[in-house]
Length: 56
Image (cartoon, rainbow, N blue to C red; front, side, top):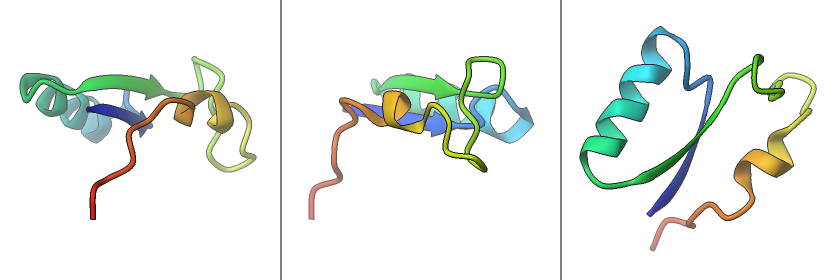
């Protein structure tokens, strides 16, 4: 499973990333430092490219 976490280096996001990785997910981490800005939308296309859609 490929997962993207925006804010993945913050206090909560880093815990989410670790938990996902512990469960075998491939995690792409987005943060302001990596060029992802959720507010302006900058970098989101690149972050979410290749992310697995949840099954319904």
